[in-house]
Image (tube, rainbow, N blue to C red; front, side, top):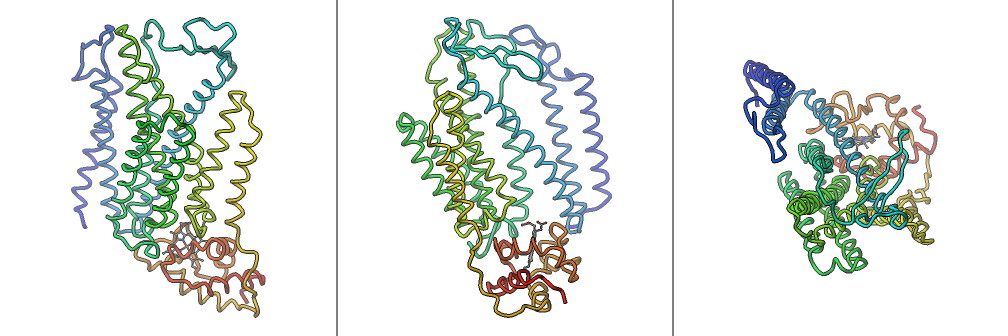
Length: 471
Ligand code: HEC
């Protein structure tokens, strides 16, 4: 689609104008237009209404600028460059919000586990804790139910979670959905269209949440062990499902996003509403419904066990030896179990309930993942010397469609990761990475788009093992 450059320029001026004007207004007069003079129940001026409109306007202007830029660079080499920078910026935001969220979550579970509940604890308190951090001493108290009077300034932890989800969802689009035919779908796994793949992906998150939520509302929640067992079995089923629908790498990210989605939904649909109901009841002096707090606590405990598996899955996307394994879902299952086990050990340790077995067993489980994904130690015998010209022929046939200074692939218009195989030196320089991606993990050519054969992979292996000469 060709868009008139003049229209784009005018739109740029409009968007930047809106951005600067609103940015100025939000700083100079946050009460401008809306909410001026209004006060809340406690007699404080309400500022948020007008500010919220301004922030929304600024966000839309930024979106407009992005769309504009996309239209400008569409179908040129700059398109993938723009996507890369979007990827970097959103990823950085995602990691930052994620650290803030999971950090707070770890901290509060630690507090809960480490509270002093016996010595010098006033009647209305559940416990207290002394801590030293950043050169200061802190003294914290947890109430059994709620303080007699709800304090005016009560800090809520929720935006960390919401923004982690929002940026994660954007990242899923930037990395996988905009590029569905290359990264989401692997025709050797299942031949579906991009639209089908995206609907299955997004739909699966909703289904996963509905199942989990029903489990939490059923009697099952009373039996922790059975709940964990059934929950884990369901997770494995989802992993198997994803690995039979998407490319292995996309399957991993969907598995992680599915669990991460459940965690955020726990915050959004259960934890925060329960807390709001508790605060409202306490303000009116009504007795608190103890199930509210209990539900919220159960969900935040589930979230706590989900954290390490989710972190692993997010990181695994950068390690082809994980998703490149023959049964990628098995690897997901093993690592989820092992990392959740480590979290369980840490939780018990904070409560001073030491358990001898949990940590070693978890470590053995994790080692098993490393063990089964190792390359076979019985290499195809390299009977004869493999010459460089044979290797070069394979690479020219299977790789340069994407990896050259002038790619012919329909998706990649510039060499991915800057990897090019134009000259013998280019190939030699990358021989270790080639070994890793082509022979050990078999994750290149991507989705085996160029139909590389096992024999060709073994020839490359022999060539490298024989010293990789370019003579
Ligand atoms: C369909 C396009 C395509 C083909 C064909 C292809 N690759 Fe790739 N390659 C990619 C993409 C995309 C990436 C970056 C994403 C990733 O690392 O998975 C990549 C990354 C790599 C990397 C990792 C570079 C790094 O910095 O980590 C290596 C090595 C590699 N390819 C080697 C090969 C070899 C060898 C072949 C031929 C046997 C090949 N590729 C064929 C698309 C392709």
